[in-house]
Length: 282
Image 1 (cartoon, one colour):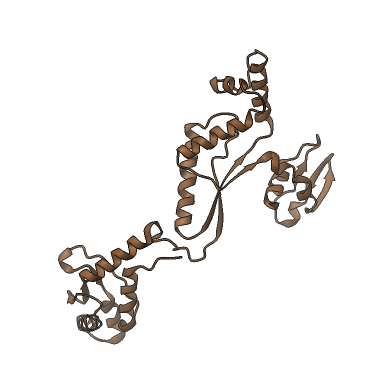
Image 2: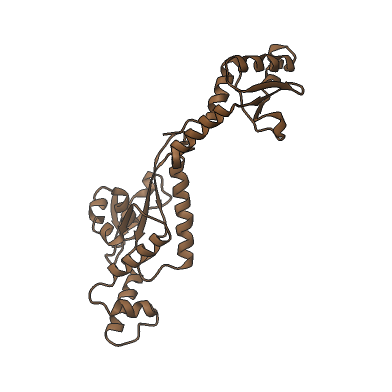
């Protein structure tokens, strides 16, 4: 929910009797007051009256309604306003009561937004480059949430495919007392993971999540590619498909895409679009 802005409330109160929208600006010179408006200058052509006279009337009405401590016409028709100490105290109390939510809720149409970030494969510790992505992504998520949107932060683990095969091969090589393959993974962390029994992925995931937690980047959900892939058949069943060249295709060109997309390759492995379809189905 948006927090009421005391300055906006003051501008709205002035607008009620000014007859035109009032915008309040901070004067460049503090001697000119706390806020100023040029509404009298904007009203003058319509009313056919000197803007300074209009500013004087608005000043009197502002004081009569006890909206400000002082109100004075200035220059060709500006209206300088000075708020009271009680107004400042009330405004400060609102800010303190709102806490971190002060100023939030500015989105005209709040939406549900998912911010996927980092999403590095669980084949090694996070790098500085990955941490940069975490900082960017978390900043975007915080700004969207501050604006009043419902934000979910997700980390998508691609724990299947060629990179993961090389990761497992590297671990198994160390366990056999051999060097990891040339195109595999090397480093002390591989030896450390190999020294533990069982699947090396869970402790690698835990390490990644711990690193992000120390970086103060927190996630609402953690998705695994392997889990998504189990849902591919159900997703394909919902699509407009056909078979060609020993592969299964989605007829996406009939639905606005520039070409059809392969779902199941000729070797029987799922294509990227198949995993995307399963993920969207979720």
